[in-house]
Image 1 (cartoon, rainbow, N blue to C red):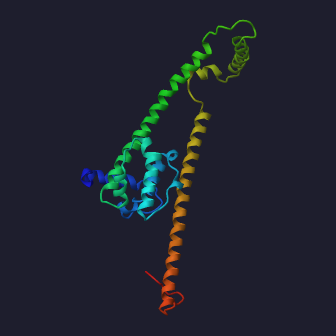
Image 2 (cartoon, one colour):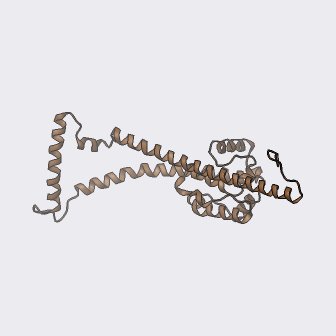
Image 3 (spheres, rainbow, N blue to C red):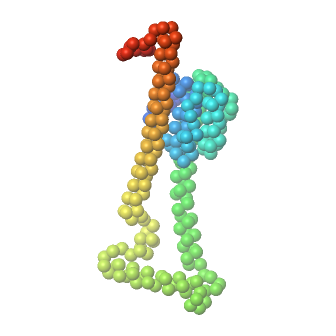
Length: 249
C-alpha cells in the first residue's frame, strides 16, 4: 500500500499531522497510530462533534486496537464518507508499513470535503428560510375577516412597532425594518458570534490538555509499576537498591 503514496505526498502528509496537537509524541507513525487513539484525536481536532475521545483508550493488544478502529469507523468514518474495511484495521493494528499513511491521506481529503459540504449547506440554507418567512407573513388567509382574525391581530402588533421605528428614526437610530431588509448583522451580533467561536476553541483546547494530562498520569503509573518490579527483583536476588541509586537507564 505504501507504493500508492508518493514521497512528496508522504512529506506533505507528515507535515499536516505535525500541525495537529496530539496527546503523545510521534516516533514511529505505524506503531503510534496502530491503536486508533491518535487518529481519533485528529478527527476530534477538526470535527469535535463527531468524536468523543473518552470512547478510545490506548492499547497494545490487537483486540482493543480493532475495537477502537471499528468504533471510529461506525461513529465517524461512515459519516464523512471514508470507506475502510476490517482488513485495513487488521493491517494498521499490526503496524503493516504504509497502511496508516494511506488511511490518513484519505482522512485528510474527507475532512476537507466534509467542511466544504457544511459551508455550502449553510450558505444555501439562509435564502430559502428568509424567503419562506416572508411568504408566510404576507400570504393571505381565508379567515382574515373581522377584528378577531389572526391578520387583524398581527396588524395591531405591527402598528406600535412602526410608531417605535418612526420615533427611533427621529432620534437618529436606524429603523428595525431597514435593518431587516438589508439582511446584515449588527456589530454586536458579529462580536457575540466571534466570542462564541473563541469560547468553543478554548473548550477544545482544554479537552486536548485534559487528554494529555490523563496520558501523562498513565505514563507515571506505568513508570512507578516498573520501578516496583525492579526493586522486587533486586530484593529477590539479595541486591537491595541503595538510596539514590538508579535502577534503570
